[in-house]
Length: 452
Image 1 (cartoon, rainbow, N blue to C red):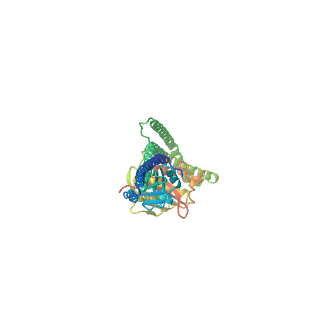
Image 2 (image 1 turned 135 degrees about the vertical axis):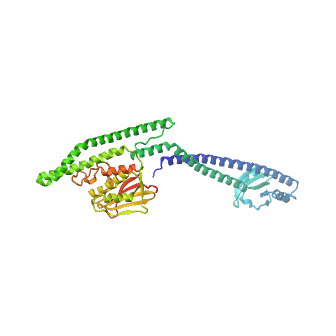
Image 3 (image 1 turned 90 degrees about the horizontal axis):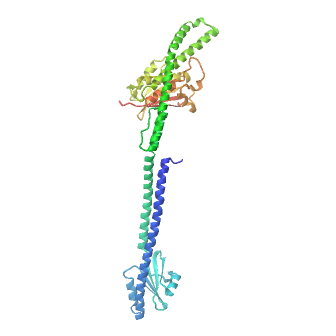
């Protein structure tokens, strides 16, 4: 899964900080380690040369006190001294096998050149310094332990590694903060575009001081203003057309009522034509009423304003006003209440029940439930269900799904579910379709629950 832009920016900051501090830490560790080892080596060489001079003086004056001198050289420090003489090795301090000394170290010292090497003796790091004593083949060797130096270097390494890790975390945190701050206008634009897409055409972006962001906000606000004006013009046009159709529609409805009373006098093709005419007039009347409501609804303010409504009581009243046999209503406890326009809520329930009656064999279950601060209206039908690719489209205007193109008394205007979606959006909720357990479709309306 690709990283989001914010995570990529934070990761880039973290890796950049980690790389930079890692390079600096490595350079610091190498420079400090080389410097400390060099200083320790110089100090050891100077100390060994001074001790070798003392040993050489003792050898020239006689070797009676040589053992005491060598013991005195190791009494105040955890070092080891070895003296190579023609007769063998003389050692003092920590016991060391002379064979562990490198041959090249001894060869350089025997040639009259002081030499030093770092090596491990019995798994202990030491600095071995070999100095000629000036007395023929005599060579003075002193081994200085490097445990303290290694501890210091290890501590320095731990501190540097901890610093690099802390710098990486700090860089990641700084990147996250910087990306969040830099991308805040983009997040605001995304949220505003989402609100516009959901129908809140009055959404606008704030004016920014930054010239680039100000140009973006101005372009977005101009676009939404033009879109809002266009939608309102279209709604006003639909309202005007619907209003103008009311007078001829009333005449047609009255004439259809007269013809309906004399239906028995017409037989054959004339009777069938009259039935078709009466069903189309009824459908035309419903369509005009729905168009008028849609256009009027666009002129009203958004939001769940209005009175506190007992939703369970409202659903029971809608069921009681219908001619079909009522069904039981499943109600959560305590009874859910919402804040909104009672007319909108009544139309939502009525249209969902009408849709179930016309296209899905009627409603078989109606529930009003509460869940996590929201109120749900669930309408289950006995139909074949709604395919997933149609579950969004059925809430569009003039969408009738598989019933498109059919005519007759049971046909709808294609605006009922569009009105449901529009009313639910105005009330601050949402509506969707899901499968009903056992077959069929379940229409779910979710609204904010009002405080008692």
